[in-house]
Length: 201
Ligand SMILES: C[S@@+](CC[C@H](N)C(=O)[O-])C[C@H]1O[C@@H](n2cnc3c(N)ncnc32)[C@H](O)[C@@H]1O
Image (tube, rainbow, N blue to C red):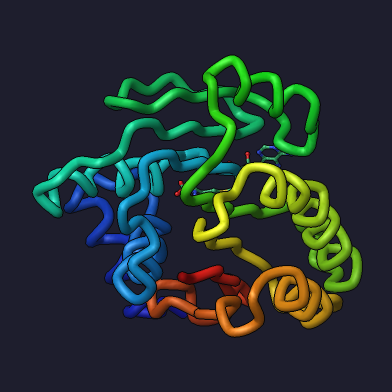
């Protein structure tokens, strides 16, 4: 049965030329937590078909100041896009040495904001899908440690499958406890198990 609320976001995305309705999730997170405040360098991982990138690129125009210097983008799928200040790589984000090399080639040693909209290929068995999802996130967490500035922020999509609570507990332990929060944007599909872990500042 059609869920009209879900459908409304899909139609809105078409009308506003977003490649996916996911853009509204990022917009909600940004509005609530001021995710991109004063951000100069942004890393967007797992990002095809790049609706988040479209949102990030428009930020300067929306706010009247464009402090963004560089947005770097990784997805395993190649995409050819031309957006100002955006560099894109078809790269497996779990391949740390390559990712580090690419960041170094761009002279990126610290990052203000990392956004991660990861979605594994699911098979419908929640335990296995849950393990895959957490495994992929765990593989990238060291990168946050290495590159994120002290006051840096992140938004990571996770699925409320097994080990989700443990991941949050670990992140709260690793970062300042009260700065790690969870948030489910209204624009997420109603039946979806996804939720975002935010490091705010
Ligand atoms: C939900 S989509 C991201 C949507 C995006 N944020 C947007 O706004 O359009 C998840 C993406 O993760 C990518 N992905 C899955 N495994 C990956 C990996 N190991 N390395 C890089 N990207 C991967 C998929 O190709 C897919 O495009």
